[in-house]
Length: 497
Image (cartoon, rainbow, N blue to C red; front, top):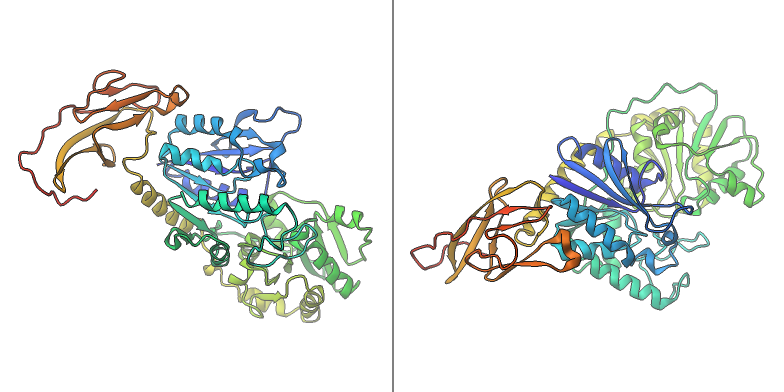
């Protein structure tokens, strides 16, 4: 299977939950399939829409410079027509069997229209609330949690008409997908409450999988309980909440709090950390096991999490978690068993939970032993489910997909009576993918789309343009059997269109 994955930004230049999850899926898919990545990137020294190619972990990546349009205040963040031609060219050249859209801010949702126009089967994974909220997580720009159901009358981050048109377009466009996937039930239900309920059967949960078999490194003995926070300086990740809790607890030689990437927040807010706080630089995802293995408890004080990859990563390392009740964390943290949940943004309650472990350090092992790693979905299980979703999407698009493989595809044509009408069944011999030709049938030559050149097939397989009996182009050469025999008996074949 040829699979094109589309994501806003990709590794190694950009590391976040969506890019990491996209890479994990790609690493597993490439074991048995051909996978390529199409993404944006940021470079202020290059001209906008500059295209370049590179390889990451053996996978071809095509990227386009979209620096200006990662600004959520610009319409191009969700509707970027200038990005279409490059995507269409790459799509027709690679000719994938399926396209999997992940986060696509900057690239724009109109790329979905390109795939739909070409008849390419495609699915969308919604990793967050970008589809209804241009700030992605239903939070205010002051770091406050918004209502769970978006209310345009209350939104003041952008003009209401801008937000209304944006939401209407994105919901309408997303429903063109063969399947809409979310990583958690929480996100699925939230999106449906916010307008994605037109076709409930189309929205399904495909839980993010993780690489199993993690072997935590031996913890370095410090004689102190080590609390770890890796959310950086982003208010969405609750940096103010963790700092408020630490100030509430105060300096204490029984613990050490390691805050990764929070230095700028402290500087900008003129906060001087006390002696129990250790501010450390951000680190690459390849060091996550090392960092968590050297921790006793991981703190996740986010305002909202659609899934919380960090919670699962901590659990795979055998480390209990104290997390806010912000959505995705609640589907994996068993309060008082393998960790604690606290009210979102309540730094005093977080401090109370942290004090529990400071005063009862023996409980850390008990909570760690209660972690059921079997509840964490493996990447193998996720990808197995994805393949089934892909195959279903491809089946639904038979007869509509005009982009095919570069090599010749042998085709068998047969005529049959269906519901008292004569139709022609065309079947690709390599995989038995089939569709019915209506007469006349319009076939688009996609690799020269810009010239609007079409080849029209009539029911006798006569080409009005191009070589008789063959569509000739650099992308796809379909060898057709002309003048297929007509059935002698007229009647219902039992086959439905």
